[in-house]
Image (tube, rainbow, N blue to C red; front, side, top):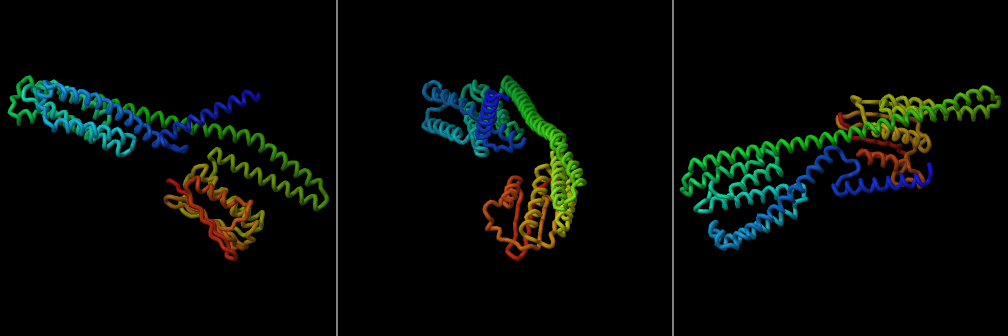
Length: 426
């Protein structure tokens, strides 16, 4: 590939990573975001956008309220000529600003918005019912109740959450009766008409909200499925390439070493060739295990048991394998971590501990899988790992990445026990 094309691809990848990172930071998500977390983030962003729109609508209402207070005729009509009316206006202004400041908070934003919206509704009912003439069901502001129904349905599309604006009409009717106003046939028709409009608004908005949320969940799940399919296809492609390329080369090496071994006469030369053949056979076994994991065709329990047997035969070390619990399918990453930790433990035991016996136990519990490797060797101080030895560090990093727990219990002269626990779902 030409250098210019490589640079262009690197720039595109860097731009793509930066864009993904910016979106994740803005939504306060991690790289390993799940479909549920993505949906929750989307719902929070949608609520914040709608709550901000409510704030700007409140500003319009506050502007109209200021005009009502400023014009004597209008303030007289609504009976808002007292100091209490100005106090109420500034209280509405203050809680509107306070609501705007906490909108982004996942919990407080929703609760404060709902409470302040209920306060707006109370003020609206007071303004509708207050005028002595032309108030109640005859008020020109009665249509505002439909707006509140729409706002509640948009922000809180749940039956109980939409109840306050639905109760505004019967409360207004009740206030008319308490104020000794005659409810005429036209006002009854108005009540029925607005009630019907309320139910239509609620049904349409709740229905559209549920369709929108369901469509978004479906898209997020589809994206997750496509991502998994892409990973599986890439793993399969790599598995084929490795099998046909590296696997064939190792097989050819084994055949060649067997041929040379038959021709060799010197014992020292035969020993070197046999060691080379053994290394090639171990490499091809490791390759087969990796290919099985990539194709998700690896059976963990049997794989660990087979590795323990082959390792015991090769090193002439007494290794005993035990398994317990009901085996279950784990993710490829979890299986690989368990297998690599077993490899590292056995390798360290042979290199450093000089044990006579090693006990390996794989146990499946209800909510986790547990691997224990114990030897009766020389032991060591886990807090004083020599520089340049990264086995324990690699094991701890594997455990941390998968949310597992690694415990290394050892002391000079007492042997070593490595316990690795990993969360698992049935």
